[in-house]
Length: 193
Image 1: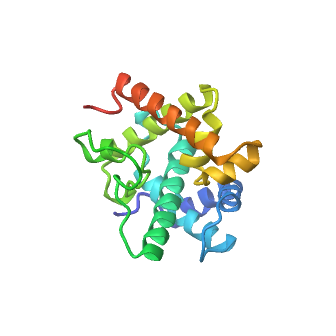
Image 2 (image 1 turned 90 degrees about the horizontal axis):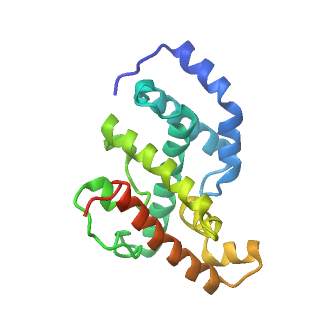
């Protein structure tokens, strides 16, 4: 994709978002990447996000950029897991049934969407859906369990230790939350059956 702006603009934006980039780099721990590597990757993602961002669509740029980063992180983690196992990670392996028709809907919970292959409309849909998912999870009684697992990439055991409960309890609540979340996504036309 051709760049929309000149190098000075990108440098200014990278400087403007340095705090967020550092925060995000400190938030994630990905095997094979140190903090500086992640900051570099996230700076490059910022440039991509700037090139693809359309202000008229109404999405907040910070959310748009954070979605780009989160998708890249989850994709990197899943790629590493697949390499370790010597297999590809499918939606079925993640416990998600293929009831939906479109590519985006198939990937609702996998967070494995390749942002480079999305059209601006598809990416806008993903950003709006992600904002909706986060809002719903924050309103759920044990939504922070699912946020930890789905969004932050933690294991059930890690979330359990942080919250003083067993991984089985976290798994049970996470399962209830994802079922409720699927219903809410269907009700609000984020999943079409």
